[in-house]
Length: 416
Length: 94
Image: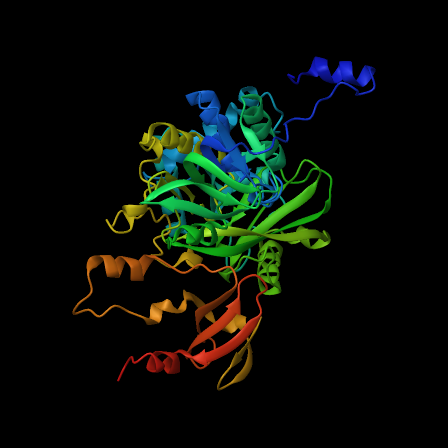
């Protein structure tokens, strides 16, 4: 069933009796060409592009809980491509271009809103660094714009421009950045993959891999063995836990990142504001809630909740840069589990086990990467060679000294 | 989280810097280690969902290194020891 404005009107006039479930609930088959572990944004996107771009339809996405119940439902919905390094910027710009065409591709309203993102600048050195970043973005076909103080005062008059420690001196804007309705991303990809014949199997937990003579033959699950020509792990957040079942240690730690939403307010914040120096960023959802967050808690965690010191730190940052936020009440807070990698960049690669593939290590940049992650992972799975745009995201980059370390922090995951 | 320091008693975890998987204590022997050993030591980590041994550095306190056994699903801390004692028990620094 195609969705359209005409269909909405027709259903409204006929009592909404014609809507169909957006995807089936099939029983798992004995064997698939490709089994994708993880029904989050990245796994469902991978299935969509495998079917639509590569014509591979004998595919299952298996999910421990319900689809979209992990990080694609627990993020702050921001999309952007404001990276510096060669290994990253073309990939995230590819992702942003895919976001721009996503709704037509999926025939699904994902509420892609290019309301713009702005990073605040407080010192001359920071201005140099951000201008350099902006130039790198432009060289890679993205958009970037330096904002002076007068422009920021016009667009965001409510900010605290004269904070003693971090006075605002300028900003780097990406007008094409913005926000997307995150659940709709999972649902739209799921509906499209399902319509191409992909089986989406929920409430099916992977309990182990069947590996013989260095080849992965399928996965053991809570609903029995499922054979596979190729097995594709796509469970960022739980990568370490899952891949340990295949005997692998990863260059990844799992950390908890918290986010917060205020009560609904009238339209207030036009775009996304990041105050990196104060560990705070904020945007306003279409429902009116201020969606904000800051740093990870900093210790390994698989609990989808954080602790209070980070809440205090984030709220202090908010009060420092945007004092009016003190009038709003926090309505909800939650935590998501991040694959924090050793250089802050992701991995999309084969493993040393034939037939077992890996996608993870997204740190806290996974949501915006969803389309490009699925697109390039599907390419790797279909053709057994990395997509040129994701060719830097290999396991061996640490052994070879080719880290993609945007912040220059080294191999300490909680600093990325 | 409260870390029960073996010398100082209960301390707020915010006083500490987190350094992750306590297998960092097991540094390869520079005389015999291969590049693969160093790669595994520098970049690969245990990432346990459950009880995990971790290094915490008491930067805002007595600057001691601790090995904390903590459950990564519940954040519950079950034991705390000085990293020095753990390393010596493994035969290091003799």
